[in-house]
Image 1 (tube, helix red, strand yellow):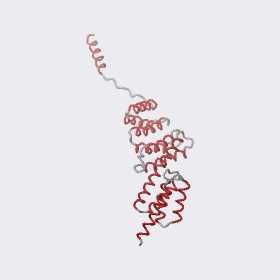
Image 2 (tube, one colour):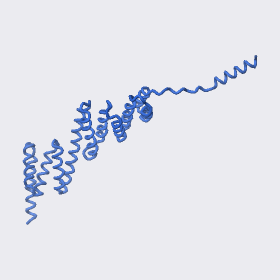
Image 3 (spheres, rainbow, N blue to C red):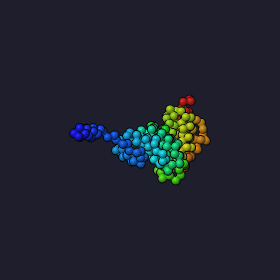
Length: 254
């Protein structure tokens, strides 16, 4: 009897020493998405992405995987990795083109590029990409909630692009390459008619046309300055510069 008691005690002791094997919780996309969002709020982007990528891989309902895909893209924005963010938003649109958050993804593509614009000299390429993204947003999703802001951003992108064109034209003008300057300035007039520096553009065109011997185009540019910008002094300045050019040319030919 005593032996039986000892054996029973030994068995109980061994059982108490065996570590309990934890039982894995069943996959819950809702729970994991909530946890991922919490980690994003706390600044743990990589940890959040691991949870989100798991949701994308395992979710069979079709409800949580798209949301997780968007949050992966958002995480790259938060981590200041714009190229990766843009690619993720584009991937989302390729996979879920008719999702209710498709317009959000398209808007975010425009915003990713918009934030990279650093003026006309360092960012015109991003202005072009941002403009294209916002125009696609408003054409593909005409009733999107970001429409008004997108229209404002479009005008700001166009202003950057127009100023870039003017600066390139001005560079050619200062070098004495009037044909190159005219090409840029005329393109500017055609593509960006609302450019705020149009008076300066017309002034340079009038002088360039004079130097190229294009009298009709010169006169048309001078007339347009007077008509569109009657308060501007650039009309008289252009006439003075043209006059000085003629005098210098006549003196050099003697």
